[in-house]
Length: 248
Length: 256
Image 1 (cartoon, chains in turn green, blue):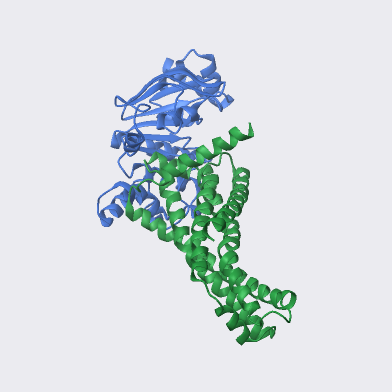
Image 2 (tube, rainbow over the protein chains, first blue to last red):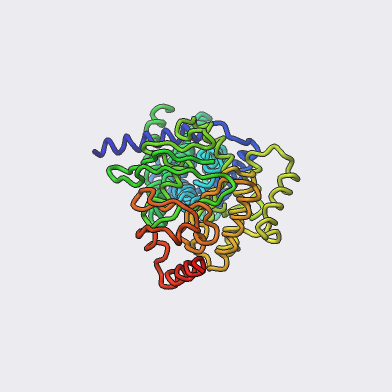
């Protein structure tokens, strides 16, 4: 019974994606929506990304320096580890996990409210493919913005690490710089970007699915918003495991 | 003209609509009335294609709705306008942008011409001075009028109104009814109104379809309602003492 329900949900999701990825009726209206979503999903998230990454970068650096580094380890270990954690996992996967909470609930509640207030029905009656008009700009908007957010997150984390050196005096800036520059593998940067693009698709499409298919009233919109965050977080974690194995 | 033939709609084992047959002419205000839960909204959703009927067919000027492809349905829907119970205006758009939306989506006219058309529609519903406001800043009656302006922006052949008077005071309801009636004549649309409002029934009901327990129970005009020998219809339309007295008054006037 549970399996049938899961298969039914997956089928509904795939059908919605088929409708979503069809040619927009009016390119000018699509671009208008696309720019709006770039701003709403991407630009509006820069603040939280910078803030969280700054503190996590600083905390990673402090933890490594104070709790892991020992006398027999090189002085650059803290900087090196901070860079690798930020590049490989935090800025791509954990940041997307955090964004699934902010962006995912935003998308699900917006579409859910549009559904319950009959705005989606109004679009359908006008002959507009509502899935394509509403969901496609969100998916493409987040996919466009997420690499930028990953880059901002990595740099903000590194600035956080420098703050521990310059303000906290936990380690010397020279040791940190040496660690950040030690044995840099450019592929790790691209790996983070590739993973984040997959995660952006998961966040936007899964949250849109939960919002778009809401039936009922405000309670159901709230439930859909929660389900969107839970489902996209779970999918990000599973696909992170798979993608890390595939890309490493 | 819209024709419904042997329309049935079930949800699981529950049969909501049973063998509905009707013809709605153009240039006429057609009312679907019935108690809450009688199947009016389901019938309207079947008419506009938001629900697929379990069996039967809806013909739009001899074009069968259920046999159409999705593209054909989209093309047909561009000939439709709909006023929803909640007005269903787009919150993030201004009044003018709401009315311009279908034009922006489907018209190849210049921006200036599209704006001109939208302003004409807003003037038609006496809201010319509210074009820069947002739906949240408008009263319920004003929202309904914006919804009417948006619905007529594309010159629809078919106009659907789902309980256009719900939540409005009697005076505003009359204004909305009058507006819909005028637009129907002016643009020769096939207008179908889903309503509980007995004032609407008695003022603009040129053709009335009474749905009772999912069936087409009675059909006629507002003039026939008073004389109809149908207990279920009588109990529904003349439910209050005031309406019962009004009916007696009308019958006495007709007798004299």
